Image 1 (tube, rainbow, N blue to C red):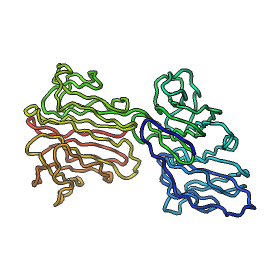
Image 2: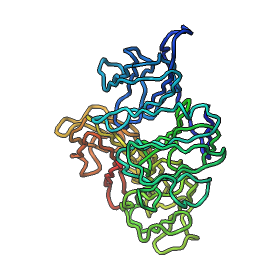
Image 3: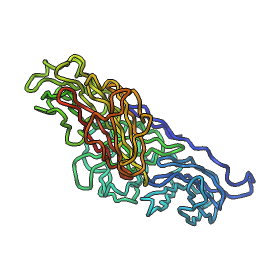
Image 4: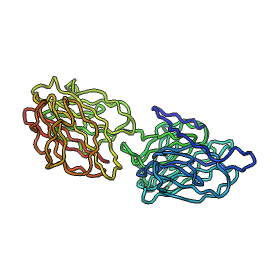
Length: 435
């Protein structure tokens, strides 16, 4: 089994396997493992000669080697829970051969990439195989260095989608894998420190979260997703009527930031601890509001919205609201929306929230009841359409915030609506969370 450790906690994905082939020692066998690397494809069952050998395999999941009969074999991917065959191919498997089969590309162009691992398997050396299976990432330069080393020269240059290469006889130790666009210097993916002591196949696939366009899958007997060693943060100013300065990591990030303003998209930062402080406009870091300052614990590969919520008339009660964001939605029918209570108005603590189709009657019961300052509804999936969102004082039905009677939800969208304000009146900030 491959031993891969990181500076963060990761989880290996294991799959329930269905036996394939018989125990008849007179038969010749080959060995095949399968990886699901298509971000928008549904979970699949893997069939060999019409029999399921893996079931309900989702994106970024893969298996160990399965023993199958050598010779010509029919391999098919069936949409899990259905009779629909999404892809079918014929493979000829050599006796005692070892093969990696990767289902990759967008679902409309789904294909199988087959790697012959036979010569690398159990050859007494540690080998790393690099596979580019992220179609939207374009050609990349791959840097495999000692952990913490400078980039130096690219280990592999201008690697296009659907290409793979082997790095043979790698010494055991701590490594770092980084990717840039072909010929570029900006790192778009950084694995952080990886301890490698035996064979590993490193598959770059489309990322479902965070700032990087790719995630690296470390694959051997199981699959360990290695997210980019960064996080991203978006800041929302919801302290009613105050201009502020915002510091991050001890440096001024935003100057004279006004009420209801947000950062221009997300700011990419290092994963780990990030000190955030908010001061009055043109004040120094030493004058930061203690209740609007703190240390954010940012997980690698994640995205966050940080909301400074409160009112200039009651700054002692102001607070930071930190939310982990969803950045990808592959639904072809629904959009996701999250509602956040960041209003310090006394009449808005708590509120009832009604969500219903535009032009329809308000439902008798609130969709979300008794939502208090700092709380959110979590992401809720709604069929594509136009909606009314009434945010009303607890126990009432009259909407307190204008402009929320025609919120468009499109298939695949991800949105956050934030209720803000106090003395200057209540309003809503609508944000697009989709990367």
